[in-house]
Length: 320
Image (tube, rainbow, N blue to C red; front, top):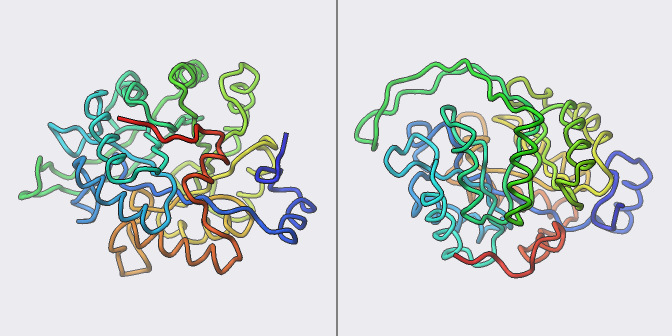
């Protein structure tokens, strides 16, 4: 059932009422790095646990209440973390620098992981973990990673599909439930709504539902307001809606979400540029702009405490 902070975002009269009465504080999630590109693409992309913690701390100070993080393989930094030990070190470093931030670990990993390796983060006790809802298909080239960067590699072409099935998604959701982790359900197109309903029917996710619409990724819905609205029509009422946009679509998609009463994800995982021809200095600069936009739209920025209340998380941050 919808609350004052969760409602049917596509409902005309609910939107008008919330604008009149005041939209709730906007939660800003910083997607600090990603599992595919690294310093070969942007020198500010954090890779080691200390670099990740430092970058997240800057974003936290700027106004981020949640971090979506990809741990890296300590023996081969271009690859994602595939052991609980690597994940635990990352989470502990973040918590040391950011006492209250919500820690959200990815189960997306990198392009070469097994499904068991993608689940390694769950035992490292994040508060939230991402949950892909559909297969993910893409074709692209990763640029060369030259020396003196650690673990150099040649440019590599990928044509792949991350083959999530109903059964695998249920397995991931069940593991998160067993570890008291809130799933961040990521939907790339309207097909994800079928899976969301299935997870709800099976009791594998509980309200409020944290659902992210990923706009502009290959084979995702095109990043337009029309497509966002269609996705919103199909989400459950008791949803905390988080929106991301890939590349140049980050700014319009997150601004649209802030305008609509939703919550936003920014950061170097999704977009490297402040504007055409000018790269972001760091993750904090992306968060700072999101804060300015929220304030211009007459929305406050949610503190970690407010974000925890919104998501139904424990009031006390995780300990490591």
